[in-house]
Length: 378
Image 1 (cartoon, rainbow, N blue to C red):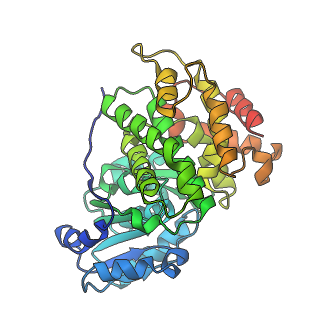
Image 2 (image 1 turned 135 degrees about the vertical axis):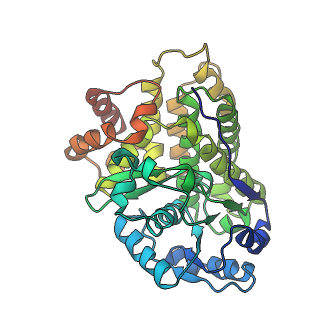
């Protein structure tokens, strides 16, 4: 059986922030908590959001860490409750939006964040009581604004998914204007995150032709425009297409992800300072090579269709093309370049085997397979 379900209302395009006040009213939000980070606030974006709220008095939590964790969820929940808030507006990249999702659940349900992790049976514990959330992305990578899950680090160090239809934001306001000031390397890293999402969701074996089409179109947009967005930060067309690719990759998440994210989640839990998009870019070539030997499902020519979306020759090495793109963008292409060595491999493999993305890879990976992928990525 396949689940094909698209539920998020999306306001997309330049100047779409102007719809915020009306969307907050529709969601029943009168006392919002804005969840963001210091960088986004200092850039003046939060001021634009407050102005667009048209007089609603928000509380502001701006202590989102680069990799959101259980401690930050507790702090934001305390502020949500003390301010008697009735909804959340997430402003920022995937970290702020994922943190906001954790707050939306934990502020309205009893129990610690651990109890809502999907690997702990948390899916059935999340209900319609979840606080309404509006997501306003300021990067083009995670697509969390339309995703049904959040990736959060527990107090015990595990990086887990909190997944439920109830954490999908009521509205996503995708205004490319908010990404125009994004630094080149962050543009590149988040853009490679979007590319990884489009590739992995497309490769996942579940039957969902709608998600496949969305993922392939998103991949084309990202692959075509990521270099321009990185080298020409003010290019409005490139920024619009990258924001679309980010959104599209996450719209296709319902198919599942794969070994790239199993490895990235595991390593990100061990070292939260590492950027998720950069890790995805490093792991992609080895995982694509591993998945090239996956059983053919329903006669689908997956690699051929990926090459077509990326504008590659019929016999091109997709992994090599990804590595070359990563290098051209100025991002690291090897784990050794970001301080990761063999001493961490056992912990990464253990975490990857228990990650929720492990189960939806098109080919089952063993401990030895993960170790081989890590060695290829070193």
